[in-house]
Image (cartoon, rainbow, N blue to C red):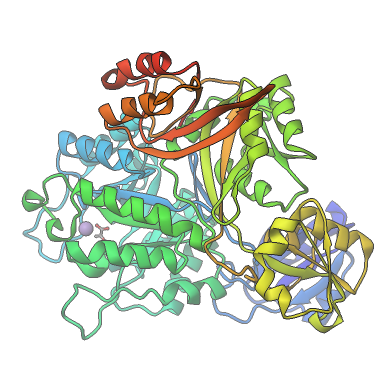
Length: 622
Ligand code: PEP
Ligand code: MN
């Protein structure tokens, strides 16, 4: 049962209810969910629903129908985010866990860890206690393996995940690793579940070889009833009659779980398929189906692996896969950033008291707000600004440490104003993020589509939804400055004839009704944002460099710069020109290079560009 508490409930009233329930042998769990203060009651109570709702401080008493309680969406409507150091599983970033099936030696673990980190993994996996079908197979390095994992974490900064097979290993796990895994064979080992419940550390709970989703969630409930809410559900294939793959990956579990539970979901396509060439297609499908994370077995010498070699990817195959995931993730509103660890460095470098902020344009709920959250997570506070110039100004003066500015949209092209501001201000780009722009039609609560007489939206959004809007020629279109201000204005006007075009996030923030989702004509609608700051990135190797330069007004001037890129095999991914400030008919070129031009191998490049150009500045390496 759930008690929805009144906001003005006193601590004394709360204690009275909780004491009464613990007297009856019930467990109580208090949470904040969607702005409401809730108490979940687990166990049998003699008090009826009516009696609870009459109690002082209780607004409502609601039964939980499912047999799992704490794990259910009925109890907690908001998605659970599990924090593992700087990594958050269940937010809008895809988390990649990769590594060998088993830790075999210090050298093997360290080599693979460096490879997977390079390609975007943020957690390292490796078994030290291996539950094998045969007692004669390699059983793992045990404590020695855990020590190796701890050293991998120390040297690479990656959090480490390993399987716990017995409660007797609990202290060692707490000492050496960040996440424990309950293997498929142990999903219903209830003593082990209770043990990890008490341990409190993040748990990856694998689905049993032949377990239903209901049984799986009951196992999660065991861990949560023990006081540990950091549970990540791992689908790793179930046993079916089909012999072509080791198991059958049940991807439909993702949307099923989304309805039933608030817990995050990780997919393991390695154990699900058991065959190397089937791993990447299923991993891509898992992300498209809405997985929060992937667990992939990677080995630097799979032919010699002591376990699960045939399903382990080679490091470069893993690299190909993460590139694909990078492209797929924005389609489902998520990101995979190779920049992740660099961001963690930024965030790690902050002191808790520093309260870093990131300026973005528009109101809360703007796509820029979404980009800021996508890039920084919750560690950096987004601050709304009225104009792009205000953002640059705030970063320049130090009022905000970061700025999040859109540079280009896949449909409407470059946002020239920001290119000009990059020229005007001496700030650095330290990262980028691309998000999918998915417009919704948003109105007051209880308003239906047929009541709408006018629609507010900024001109680019109106034009991106032209086909949709053309269906309603009688509706007046009202241009405003941004999607988020359209939503806010409709909210403030309390006008039930008005609707706004904006993000579903804005609708949620302003507690508005979504009349229709995805109304943009072309779903390939992405915006790329740059993260700007005053700091300069250190010496770490990066993937991209943005530069600006101008060239003289003579034949072949631009070509002479392009020639440098060609000579050093540097891939130019964007070239844009803008008028130079205060110099009519002279142009500044902006170029994005898929290279780190500060690496020793490319050391002559900068000098050569400087020679061939008139003005030259590195805007950022990231
Ligand atoms: C593993 O992750 O290496 C493993 C043994 O997985 P499962 O429990 O899913 O078989
Ligand atoms: Mn394995």
